[in-house]
Length: 294
Image 1 (cartoon, one colour):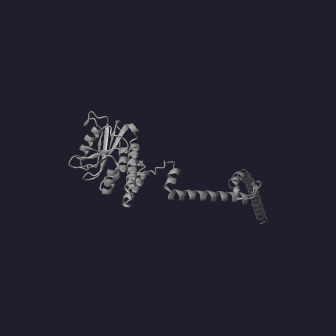
Image 2: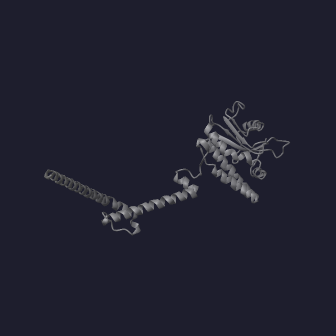
Image 3: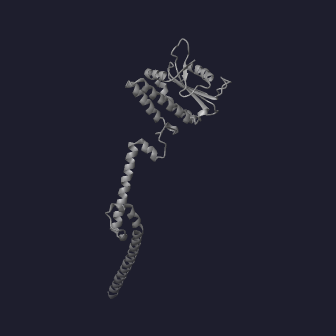
């Protein structure tokens, strides 16, 4: 009996000893960890504090090891970050121009065009054509209608040049309308800013294209149908059905057209497939530009 009691006493003393050892070790670890935490506070707090010191609501920097002061600095930094992120999100959702600037893109308001991911800044053309059509609907004076219509046409030419990556001397483009005197001519063409350099090639290829049903036609080897031409490639876009309006380009370089830029040009030129049916617009174009009959 005494032996059993002795064993129980030894066992209890052993448990208490282990408890004291674990408690001591835990205390030492926590004390060391607390010291490390204090060092972290002392190192980080001054930098965080200076980010928000303009609030004037915090304790002096000297109290850098104060956990409550450190926590207040962190909370204010988090609130500033949250507010700034929310403001940027609001601006990007509300103002597309700001979104494009944040994304590092140009101010052309680019958008993706389907599965190919090609970016086409034709929202600008949408704005231009919208302005022109509104001027017609609002019955503005003819000079204002002409200016706004010409602005769209010029923008369209600039985007076509950008799409095909052409220099000014590497292409010619013309606008095409049915003739005002149908008994004498087959069509009329015009350049916006300069004389037509290769009228002969334009005349042959446009006449051939107008006899086809396709709304978009590409000639990759111009010198096959027109051996004496100064150009290498040709494309034309015209409205569906009976011809009412079109746009054509002659290009001096070979192998300009490819699947990507033709897809992008197709997206851009989709306006012209229907604009020809808007008689008021066609007549404004006719009055705004000097035409050459053919």
